[in-house]
Image 1: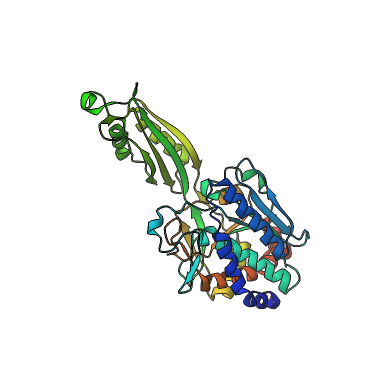
Image 2: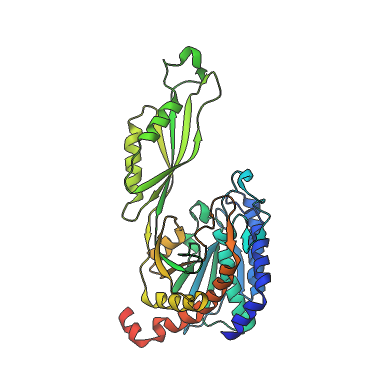
Amino acid sequence: MRGALAYAARNRGRFVEDIAALAAIPSVSSDRPQVRRAAAWLAARLRRAGLRCVRIVDTCGNPLVVGGWGTRPDRPTVLLYGHYDVRPAGDRRQWRTPPFRPVVHNGLLYGRGVSDDKGQLLAHVAAVESWLRGAGTLPVNVRFLLDGEEEIGSPHLADFLGRADVAVISDTAMHSPSVPALTVSLRGVVRLGITVRRPGADLHSGTYGGLVPDPGVELSRLIAALDVPGTSMTISRLRAGRGDGVLASQAFARLEFRVSPGVSPDAVIRSVRRSVASVEGASVQVIMARPPVTVPRVDWAIDAARAACRHGFGHEPVFRTSGGGIAAAGLLTARDIPVLLLGFAVPDNRMHAPDERLSLPVFARAVDTSIALLPALASCWPQHRPELRELTG
């Protein structure tokens, strides 16, 4: 491991330059050309790291980027998952610097996607490169699976997961800038579209106002009355009205419900449908429904993460819950693949917000932690420990 750590120390500046280069590509999930451009950049980066069988895999949506190294049956296969699509920048006037021109200021790298999730996934790429270039080998078999649709729910990911002995996902937050965290549960998400229509075309508001219901008013009352236990609701889109003097014929809202563990998306949808049914001309469309995830605590994988965090940060990770959601975590858990949600984003990194940032000192420690995690997973793997092999069957 000494050679890998020394290599990482010599190349820290270049690793940061890599984050800036990838973050300069505005790979918003809905922008197919830019997403494909980012995929091509990542494929080249994986090859430069020394990985084999690197491919851009087309799906019915945005592509996946995959690459691997090693097929030895006496070593565990570690799946390293990350995503390279990003949220839109939003109101650019709220940014201190252009969102897709990353800049460093006071030890922080600013730019959309630097923390969610380009910087975090590149910490693992840097770690694997450090092993291959600095030590000449890896202590485990590695598979990278880099997703171009995480921000829209990873609708095409399930068919490409494959098998692994453990999956590592770094797309979550730390407890503090000096104390890492293992996330043990994620909220689910339900996204719905609600439309209120009345028969006919738009009308003159002076002639028909008060006689004909306004769909915008009806929709606003409907939204205000929604109360779905175990969720938080945000209005992500609202379209009503045609301008002064016009009584519009329809109104639309897109709602997002974050769903706590123990609450099913179906229950959320049923609750909203009941409320919508009470409003004439109202209908609901299910855009996405993803259940909450509770990650099983697999002792050998947690032991490895603890050892790696002690090396990289000088602290064992604390356990935490997350208000966000990651589709891959649920898909992997459903396949009984142990998942380590080991994030390297500081709590005030401003994911999905203006001035998103990545702490460069934390990134350096994240690379060292990832370097240490790979041999720790190899040594803790039950097949290397007879007493655990009996317990795990």
